[in-house]
Structures are given as structure tokens and as C-alpha cells.
Image (cartoon, rainbow, N blue to C red; front, top):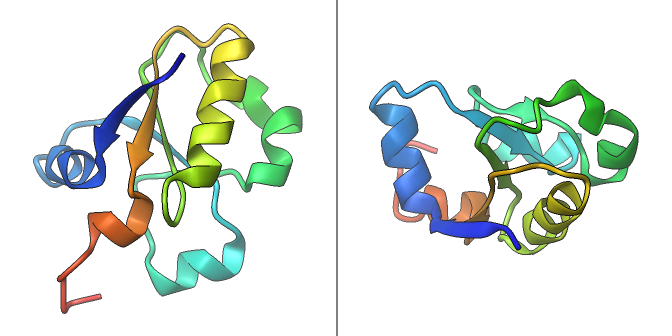
Length: 102
């Protein structure tokens, strides 16, 4: 079962300059609305075919718009042998809530 962290916690870690593996499972059009430049874009529909691009030994954060799709993908990755998968609760919506610069 994947762990879960609040979206603001991920944002703080990224802003602090931590080098994290973040997989953004949103669709391309969603990225234009609120990009997360540090993330690897891997739409949910491509994860099964592309998860081999990821290192299953690395802590892997999964992000989407609201936290639902990312939870499904995090569970899938865990079932594929990923050792430390983290769902980002609330997704990008919570990550940038109240941020007028977006």
C-alpha cells in the first residue's frame, strides 16, 4: 500500500531544492494550467507501458490534479514491485491552493 503526503509538503520539498522522483499522471492539457517542471510527465493511460522508465528502488511521488488518479497509479506501481511509492494527497489543486502567481 502506498504512503500518502499532503501536497503542500511535496511543494515545500521541491521548493527547498530536493531532487525527488515525481511522476505527474495528468493529461497534457492539464500541465499547461499548472505545470510542475520537476515532474516526469507520464499520463495515467501510459503508466503500464512506461513504468519501466522508473527505478522501483527510488522513493516515487505520484501526482495528479486532485489526488484520485495518482492514488490508482501509486497502487499500481506498488503492485509492480515499487518499494516506496507516495501518493500526493489533494494533487496539484491542493499544492497551489491560494497561490495567486499561478
